[in-house]
Amino acid sequence: MAIRIIREDGDEVLRKKCKPVEKMTDRLNELIDDMFETMYDANGVGLAAPQVGILRRIVVIDTYEGNPLVLINPEIIETEGEQIGPEGCLSLPGLQGEVARPERVVCKALDRDMNEITVEGEGLLARAICHETDHLDGILYKDLAIDGLYKVEPIQPDDDDYDDEDGDE
Image 1 (cartoon, rainbow, N blue to C red):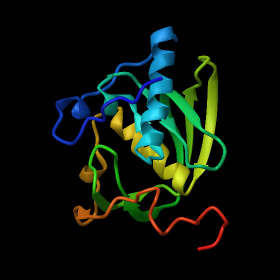
Image 2 (cartoon, rainbow, N blue to C red):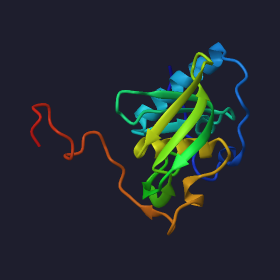
Image 3 (tube, helix red, strand yellow):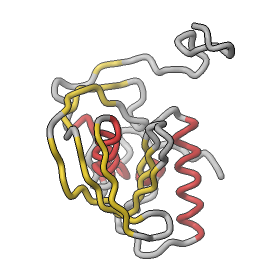
Image 4 (cartoon, helix red, strand yellow):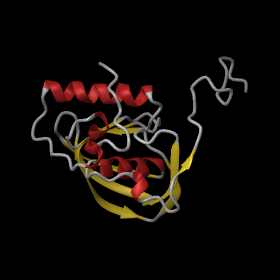
């Protein structure tokens, strides 16, 4: 596995539509592993293949609820409700914007073994599925931000906001 370079806003690859995955290969399996490693290293909850320069319809998501997801050729088939909240992106570091997303989504995709799966997500998972599938069509969250973007300080794993080893704050 390897940490890949995350493409940032202004890189034309982020605005291109990705091609569907027809079959799993060793190379794509390695890409998926690298995407997870890259996402975790950057403290993200999702990463789409174009963010590492690969124009394939692959996303990885981990909202840290014990269910890391690989979605190949994802398609949102149902939405319900609305949530408005802050959103950021590893390709736009240090920025956030308020974005309206569905509160609940149902997504049809293929898993890493190319088996069809259906994933239902609410809250953060619904937001992540929408955000990452948008990347596959060249859409960035800044295109959807209600009042533009604002600067934020990135969270560092060693910040005092995190519990120490004894569990005390």
